[in-house]
Length: 89
Image (tube, rainbow, N blue to C red; front, side):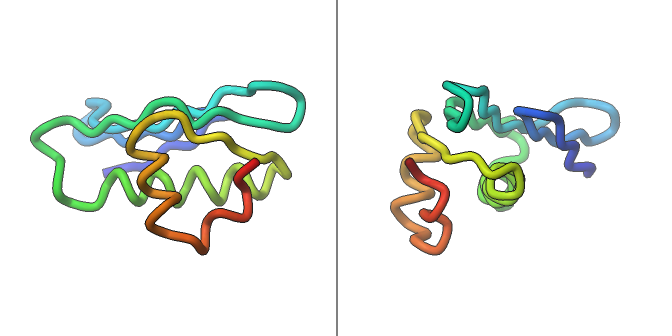
């Protein structure tokens, strides 16, 4: 499986098929909205969503942005893992 990072999206491909993604579009000049996390049903339970959020965290932090999680998975992730909360607005 390949994790592919774009400007405001990270996704996973397996055999050329997109099977998971997290999106974080810009809200303003300094803030992104982590608004969507998806993992195909056949790939759930393998830690892919958490890995996507960690990669999103690293990308957002490296870019110097703050984040507002609005998708339910991202909200729960940041509540559970306090070590990643430094990017939250």
